[in-house]
Amino acid sequence: MQFSYLEQFFPKIEKLDLPGKEAQALLAPEFRKAFLEQDLNFPNAKKAGVLILLYPAKDEIVNFALILRNTYRGVHSNQIAFPGGKVEQNDNSLIETALRETEEEIGIKSNSVRVLRPLTELYIPPSNFMVYPSLGAIDYIPQFVKQHDEVQHVIEVKLEDFLKQTPIETHTISTSYAHQKEVLAFNINGYTVWGATAMMLSEFKVLMNSVIE
Image (cartoon, rainbow, N blue to C red):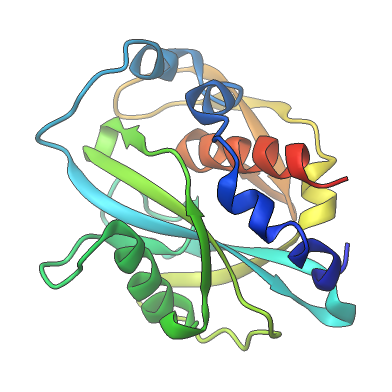
Protein backbone atom coordinates (compact mmCIF):
# COMPACT_ATOMS: atom_id res chain seq x y z
CA MET A 1 0.00 0.00 0.00
CA GLN A 2 1.40 3.36 -1.04
CA PHE A 3 1.23 6.44 1.14
CA SER A 4 -0.52 8.52 -1.53
CA TYR A 5 -3.32 5.92 -1.59
CA LEU A 6 -3.68 5.97 2.20
CA GLU A 7 -3.77 9.79 2.36
CA GLN A 8 -7.16 9.90 0.64
CA PHE A 9 -8.66 8.14 3.66
CA PHE A 10 -7.31 10.56 6.27
CA PRO A 11 -10.46 12.75 6.33
CA LYS A 12 -12.60 9.66 6.86
CA ILE A 13 -10.33 8.37 9.63
CA GLU A 14 -10.61 11.72 11.41
CA LYS A 15 -14.42 11.45 11.56
CA LEU A 16 -15.06 7.75 12.24
CA ASP A 17 -16.41 6.44 15.53
CA LEU A 18 -13.74 4.47 17.33
CA PRO A 19 -14.03 0.68 17.68
CA GLY A 20 -12.96 1.23 21.31
CA LYS A 21 -12.74 -1.32 24.07
CA GLU A 22 -14.41 -4.07 22.05
CA ALA A 23 -11.48 -3.95 19.63
CA GLN A 24 -8.94 -3.75 22.46
CA ALA A 25 -10.54 -6.82 24.03
CA LEU A 26 -9.76 -8.95 20.95
CA LEU A 27 -6.10 -9.04 22.09
CA ALA A 28 -6.66 -8.69 25.82
CA PRO A 29 -5.42 -11.54 28.03
CA GLU A 30 -8.27 -13.10 29.99
CA PHE A 31 -6.92 -11.65 33.23
CA ARG A 32 -7.07 -8.14 31.70
CA LYS A 33 -10.61 -8.25 30.32
CA ALA A 34 -12.17 -7.40 33.68
CA PHE A 35 -10.58 -3.96 33.51
CA LEU A 36 -12.30 -3.39 30.16
CA GLU A 37 -15.68 -4.93 30.97
CA GLN A 38 -16.17 -3.13 34.29
CA ASP A 39 -15.49 0.31 32.79
CA LEU A 40 -13.49 1.19 35.89
CA ASN A 41 -12.13 4.63 36.69
CA PHE A 42 -8.59 5.01 37.95
CA PRO A 43 -8.39 8.51 39.45
CA ASN A 44 -4.92 7.92 40.88
CA ALA A 45 -3.44 6.58 37.66
CA LYS A 46 -0.51 8.39 36.08
CA LYS A 47 -1.06 9.57 32.51
CA ALA A 48 0.96 8.94 29.38
CA GLY A 49 0.62 9.68 25.68
CA VAL A 50 1.88 7.48 22.84
CA LEU A 51 1.87 7.87 19.06
CA ILE A 52 1.03 5.45 16.27
CA LEU A 53 3.03 7.06 13.47
CA LEU A 54 2.25 6.34 9.81
CA TYR A 55 4.85 7.28 7.21
CA PRO A 56 6.12 6.42 3.72
CA ALA A 57 9.18 4.19 3.50
CA LYS A 58 11.03 2.91 0.43
CA ASP A 59 8.89 2.99 -2.74
CA GLU A 60 6.28 5.02 -0.80
CA ILE A 61 5.12 1.89 1.05
CA VAL A 62 3.20 2.81 4.22
CA ASN A 63 4.87 1.81 7.47
CA PHE A 64 4.27 2.53 11.12
CA ALA A 65 6.80 2.58 13.94
CA LEU A 66 7.20 0.58 17.12
CA ILE A 67 10.16 0.66 19.46
CA LEU A 68 12.00 -1.94 21.50
CA ARG A 69 12.72 -0.38 24.86
CA ASN A 70 16.10 -0.77 26.49
CA THR A 71 16.66 -3.07 29.45
CA TYR A 72 16.28 -1.21 32.73
CA ARG A 73 14.83 -1.66 36.20
CA GLY A 74 11.11 -1.39 35.60
CA VAL A 75 8.00 -3.30 34.57
CA HIS A 76 8.26 -2.29 30.88
CA SER A 77 11.95 -3.11 30.43
CA ASN A 78 12.88 -4.61 27.04
CA GLN A 79 9.28 -4.50 25.79
CA ILE A 80 7.77 -3.58 22.44
CA ALA A 81 5.92 -0.26 22.64
CA PHE A 82 4.87 2.84 20.76
CA PRO A 83 7.03 5.92 21.12
CA GLY A 84 5.66 7.99 23.97
CA GLY A 85 5.83 8.57 27.69
CA LYS A 86 4.41 10.25 30.74
CA VAL A 87 2.85 13.67 30.92
CA GLU A 88 5.09 16.52 31.96
CA GLN A 89 4.03 19.76 33.62
CA ASN A 90 4.37 21.90 30.50
CA ASP A 91 2.30 19.60 28.26
CA ASN A 92 -1.04 21.13 27.26
CA SER A 93 -2.64 17.86 26.16
CA LEU A 94 -2.06 14.12 25.89
CA ILE A 95 -1.50 14.54 22.16
CA GLU A 96 1.21 17.09 22.89
CA THR A 97 2.78 14.57 25.28
CA ALA A 98 2.81 11.90 22.57
CA LEU A 99 4.38 14.25 20.02
CA ARG A 100 7.02 15.56 22.43
CA GLU A 101 8.01 12.07 23.56
CA THR A 102 8.11 10.80 19.97
CA GLU A 103 10.48 13.61 19.04
CA GLU A 104 12.67 12.83 22.05
CA GLU A 105 12.71 9.06 21.53
CA ILE A 106 12.98 8.65 17.74
CA GLY A 107 13.69 12.14 16.40
CA ILE A 108 10.43 12.96 14.57
CA LYS A 109 9.78 16.72 14.77
CA SER A 110 6.46 17.42 16.46
CA ASN A 111 5.49 20.13 14.00
CA SER A 112 5.86 17.73 11.06
CA VAL A 113 3.19 15.30 12.29
CA ARG A 114 -0.40 15.51 11.07
CA VAL A 115 -2.46 14.32 14.03
CA LEU A 116 -5.41 12.36 12.68
CA ARG A 117 -7.20 11.54 15.92
CA PRO A 118 -6.89 10.19 19.45
CA LEU A 119 -7.69 6.51 19.97
CA THR A 120 -9.17 4.85 23.06
CA GLU A 121 -7.31 5.16 26.34
CA LEU A 122 -6.08 2.01 28.08
CA TYR A 123 -5.23 1.34 31.71
CA ILE A 124 -2.00 -0.60 32.41
CA PRO A 125 -2.20 -2.23 35.87
CA PRO A 126 1.45 -3.09 36.65
CA SER A 127 2.66 0.48 36.17
CA ASN A 128 -0.62 2.23 37.13
CA PHE A 129 -0.65 4.28 33.92
CA MET A 130 -3.61 5.38 31.85
CA VAL A 131 -2.21 5.52 28.33
CA TYR A 132 -3.74 7.73 25.66
CA PRO A 133 -2.75 6.68 22.11
CA SER A 134 -3.00 9.04 19.16
CA LEU A 135 -2.79 8.32 15.45
CA GLY A 136 -0.64 10.59 13.29
CA ALA A 137 1.22 10.69 9.99
CA ILE A 138 4.19 12.32 8.30
CA ASP A 139 4.48 12.62 4.52
CA TYR A 140 8.23 12.07 4.20
CA ILE A 141 10.66 9.18 4.70
CA PRO A 142 11.95 9.60 8.27
CA GLN A 143 15.51 9.42 9.47
CA PHE A 144 15.04 7.99 12.95
CA VAL A 145 17.32 9.26 15.68
CA LYS A 146 17.14 6.98 18.73
CA GLN A 147 17.29 8.20 22.30
CA HIS A 148 19.88 5.63 23.27
CA ASP A 149 19.10 5.46 26.99
CA GLU A 150 15.43 4.67 26.21
CA VAL A 151 15.27 2.98 22.80
CA GLN A 152 17.19 -0.10 21.73
CA HIS A 153 15.69 -0.41 18.26
CA VAL A 154 13.08 1.22 16.00
CA ILE A 155 10.84 -1.43 14.44
CA GLU A 156 9.46 -0.44 11.03
CA VAL A 157 6.25 -2.32 10.24
CA LYS A 158 4.57 -2.52 6.83
CA LEU A 159 0.97 -1.47 7.40
CA GLU A 160 -0.54 -3.71 4.71
CA ASP A 161 1.17 -6.82 6.09
CA PHE A 162 0.03 -6.02 9.62
CA LEU A 163 -3.61 -5.46 8.60
CA LYS A 164 -3.72 -8.95 7.04
CA GLN A 165 -2.24 -10.63 10.10
CA THR A 166 -4.14 -13.03 12.35
CA PRO A 167 -3.19 -12.98 16.04
CA ILE A 168 -1.30 -16.01 17.31
CA GLU A 169 -1.55 -18.04 20.49
CA THR A 170 1.82 -17.54 22.05
CA HIS A 171 3.91 -18.78 24.92
CA THR A 172 2.89 -18.80 28.56
CA ILE A 173 3.76 -15.54 30.27
CA SER A 174 4.07 -14.40 33.85
CA THR A 175 3.67 -10.84 35.10
CA SER A 176 3.68 -9.10 38.44
CA TYR A 177 -0.07 -9.66 38.75
CA ALA A 178 -0.72 -12.86 36.75
CA HIS A 179 1.31 -16.06 36.50
CA GLN A 180 1.53 -18.82 33.90
CA LYS A 181 -1.12 -17.44 31.55
CA GLU A 182 -1.61 -18.03 27.83
CA VAL A 183 -2.01 -14.83 25.82
CA LEU A 184 -2.91 -13.82 22.28
CA ALA A 185 -0.27 -11.81 20.47
CA PHE A 186 0.87 -10.39 17.16
CA ASN A 187 4.06 -11.67 15.54
CA ILE A 188 5.60 -8.49 14.11
CA ASN A 189 8.96 -8.62 12.35
CA GLY A 190 9.92 -11.59 14.53
CA TYR A 191 8.85 -9.92 17.79
CA THR A 192 6.02 -11.27 19.94
CA VAL A 193 3.78 -8.32 20.83
CA TRP A 194 1.17 -8.86 23.53
CA GLY A 195 -0.49 -7.01 26.41
CA ALA A 196 -1.19 -3.28 26.26
CA THR A 197 0.65 -2.65 22.99
CA ALA A 198 -1.20 -5.51 21.29
CA MET A 199 -4.52 -4.20 22.62
CA MET A 200 -3.88 -0.73 21.20
CA LEU A 201 -2.70 -2.29 17.94
CA SER A 202 -5.94 -4.27 17.82
CA GLU A 203 -8.05 -1.11 17.89
CA PHE A 204 -5.78 0.48 15.29
CA LYS A 205 -6.13 -2.62 13.08
CA VAL A 206 -9.94 -2.70 13.32
CA LEU A 207 -10.15 1.02 12.60
CA MET A 208 -7.87 0.88 9.55
CA ASN A 209 -9.52 -2.22 8.10
CA SER A 210 -12.91 -0.50 8.37
CA VAL A 211 -11.64 2.42 6.28
CA ILE A 212 -9.32 1.05 3.62
CA GLU A 213 -11.05 -0.36 0.56
